[in-house]
Length: 218
View 1 (cartoon, one colour):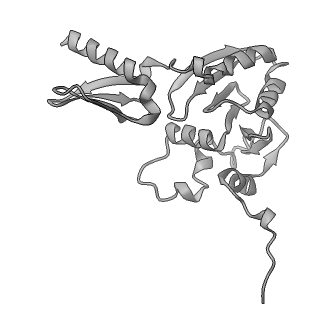
View 2 (view 1 turned 45 degrees about the horizontal axis):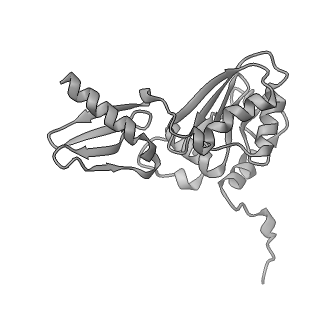
View 3 (view 1 turned 120 degrees about the vertical axis):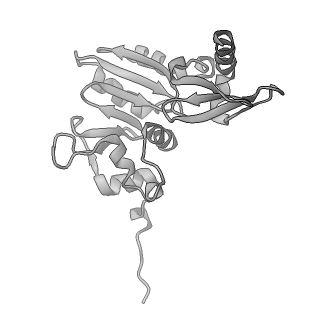
């Protein structure tokens, strides 16, 4: 016997899967992520026994089951970039990994515009590098638009140098991205050839600067 399945009820992507499991909310105190269309993902934030943090959300997805390492912030940021989600905390934090959609920007404005308590806005890219940080209180829409202009081509290339360090061995200089504790670039000491992960290409000048500083200190 054939059974007709309503295709509209089948989750198409990870965001749909999370909505199916967690649901949506209109209460900003319960929200954890702002979806691309401006809706709010329900994380039951006020329920001590049921609430989830932002990393817990990823653990609900099949693609993150069975990983050989614990889920860390850079995993979450890469996921946010892929699904175009804005991380939201009513206690004063907004975190983006790609430029917000117009619906997300309107939601952010509606939440922040008439609140006296300050919010920290963290601007990251898909690799997890911090491009900018701002502390705002009751910002105008034009202020928010300017903040997120960090995602424009002219705004790229600005990131936190504190997130990187350089180590060396007999053969290579290696640049470590501290939040993920991984090597993202290396330079052969003899050939001077550089290999760098595509998402970190913009950090090449920083890599050279850190290598120079390391040589000067040796």
